[in-house]
Length: 85
Image 1 (cartoon, one colour):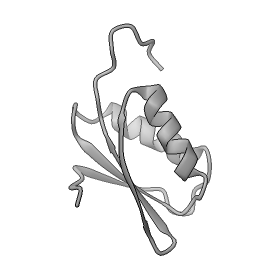
Image 2 (tube, one colour):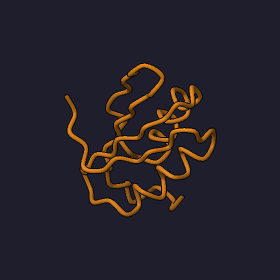
Image 3 (tube, rainbow, N blue to C red):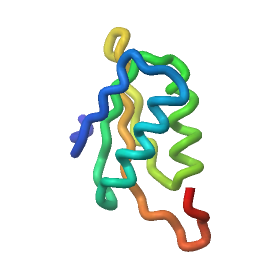
């Protein structure tokens, strides 16, 4: 089981809001900390892995718990060659 440092509740919110809120929260977190995102937006299954790849963060897991999706993301340092997003 993954232990999260923070939990972000985005239940009831739909694309692109969960990803936007995740991005804002991750900017405030330290390197290697883990964020658990709670969502009921089916679109996040595709959106979050793409955002992680684009942002340089690590997509750890997606667990379906009834209608709640639990997504785990680890903050990674961006490479110097990446532009600020």
